[in-house]
Amino acid sequence: MKLSIVGPAIPNLPWQPKPAGNPDIIWRYDANPIIARRPLPRVTGIYNSAVVPWQKGFIGVFRTEGMDRMPHLHVGRSLDGYKFEFEPKPISFTCDDPEVAKHEYAYDPRVTLIEGVYYVTWCNGYHGPTIGVARTTNFVHFEQLENAFLPYNRNGVFFPRRFGGKFLMLSRPSDTGHTPFGDIFVSESPDLTYWGKHRHIAGRGWPWFQGTKIGAGPSPIETSEGWLLFYHAVTTTCNGFVYSMSAMLLDLEQPWKVIARCKEALLCPEAPYEVAGFVPGVCFPVGCLCDAATGRIAIYYGAADTVTALCFCQADEIVEFVKSNSL
Ligand code: BMA
Image 1 (tube, protein in one colour):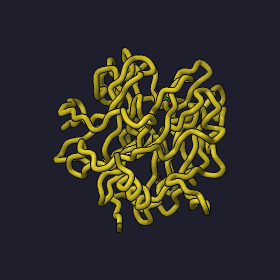
Image 2: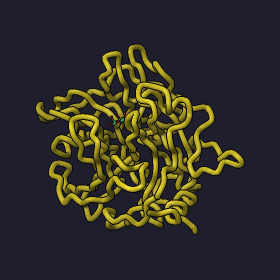
Image 3: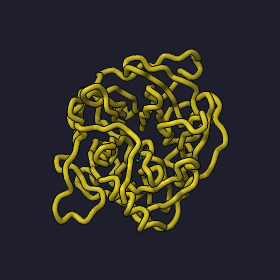
Image 4: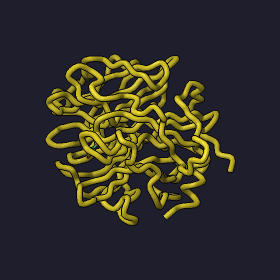
């Protein structure tokens, strides 16, 4: 299969080849975690965060968690994609409507470049979790737009292009708590204010690794075989939820149609930093860099709701694997 990818070449992508003899499709960076505990004064962890190419390096929106355990969003910058420096203060959004500007907390940000503008989506506390939306062109000024959906919703993720002039966003309707259910839907908007045409994409279910809930990870990657979507898949054990990572392929023009969906997890919590932390047993993919020239993919994921880690895969290998190991 000769796979082509729509997106930028990222020659300085963080990358480590798969170790010889490793049978996995996704492999971990050997110096994980890249963002360890206590990354800023009075911050207990940075995890579940998004990174994009920026000038000669990288920039991102990061989820911090303070000593009060409240999550906020901070800008972080990096030359090499491994080592980040963080703004000590949370992002201060400008917003025309004081009602929309009220937010109680912000977590799990995604960043998507659409037509030269960076859109940030996150889980926004507005009478319960919903999807906050903001845009920026410089990562200094952020304009907050309408919340995309009614509470309760999480894991709002834009597609990186419009479809017939409309924006498309993935999301996962939820509840106010830790949500023992969850499927992935897509919704469209002509103007980022009004959202509709909600379509079901994929549900939780068989087999067990995704029996409880699933949610979109980073923005889907456009490939000649379909949109490659990494997602978190949750199972319930006698000790609570366990979050793994898997992938599916969506139709290029009607992305609510699933072309193939992997029948197993591609990354399960097993490294020490994934199984020990504030919430043991969590691999939560949120940011992704894909070098269109080589098909190399680097995924930023939160580990154990405590630290940020990196893993890698090759686009053609993962697409082939998902297609030949589909449900
Ligand atoms: C989800 C979100 C994520 C978190 C995960 C595991 O509901 O809160 O931010 O990583 O639970 O605790």
